[in-house]
Amino acid sequence: MHIIQEEIGLPTFAAAPVKKGDDNHVIFTISPLPTGYGMTLGNGLRRVLLGSLPGTAVTSVRIAGVQHEYTTIKGVSESILDITLNLKEIKLKKPRKEAEVITLEAKGPGVITAKDLKMSSDIEVLNPDLELLTLDKGATVEMQITVEKGVGYVSASERNKKQNEPGLIYIDAIYSPVMKVRFDVDPARVGQRTDLEKLTMDVQTNGALTAEEAVQFASQLLQSYYGYFASDKKIIEPEFIADFSRAASPHIEDGGLAPVKESYTPIEILNFSPRTLNALINAGVGSIEQLTKCTEPTLANFRGFGAKALDEVKATLGERGLKLASDSVDM
Image (cartoon, rainbow, N blue to C red; front, side, top):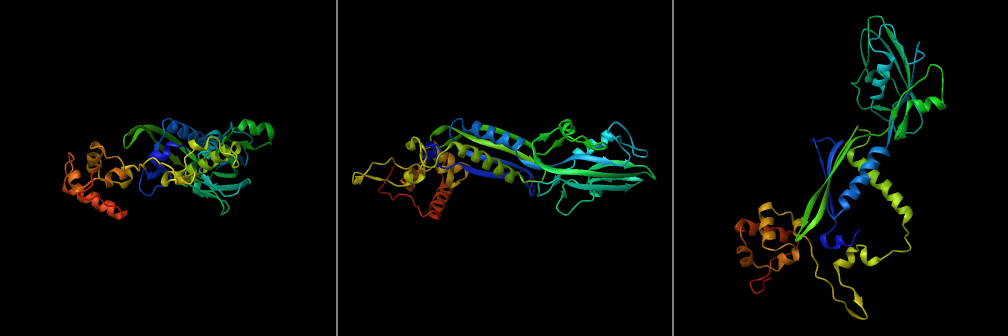
């Protein structure tokens, strides 16, 4: 990480589902970040999430008595083209990469949905209520549907050029399990520093992966590419790469104790109430180190800082084994 993180602390990573219990649509927040890193991280993650995650899709279908998609079936309300479009909307999950065939055998009257598909126990339909076609009384339909696991997008025309088989209708395959990715970069503040950023990402998947699994996969993929250019044997300009152990304790040079910049731990990590936090920051107390140098009378003189705020500060510091300075010591 950048050396700036030594001053502002490690960025926090928070995940909040849009709806309680829904792991497939989550808002992620990463903050604080140095200037420019919100766009750098957000854009990179977004591109990988949308185009590089593995998923499962229908790639072709064979329908009894049908030779091409520009036709109809007696007793079926939808055209073959409409049926293939519906098949594209099936959301599937399967562990193995190999192609598998699922079948559909139905007789009317009635609406046929994705839950009527017959498949192995390895394949899971994530939207079983999806309507595929409508059969009139006495009408029948038989299908063999091929599903595959892959990455990105493969058009039907591309498959047709490589694997042209009579009676086999190829379908555009959209493998990505990610349905939506949106990110925003907003200003963030830590202590007296106001030139920092907060990255907020809105990620929604189809359920084949949870939103958090999708972000983890994208991060690991980017890390593997960046690691390809890096060398573990040599660090370029080590003084500008964050070393949090160096920031936490002084080091010895030439047999003596080297001067070390006073630690600055952002006061925000104590999770004070907004009223208490604002009163401290407005009074110029932006770090835990500055706070522990304050006495109770000093805090009481801060504007907007009352007895409840003082009790909150003392209790919170006590949980971390810290305390305010005695009356004989001030800022």
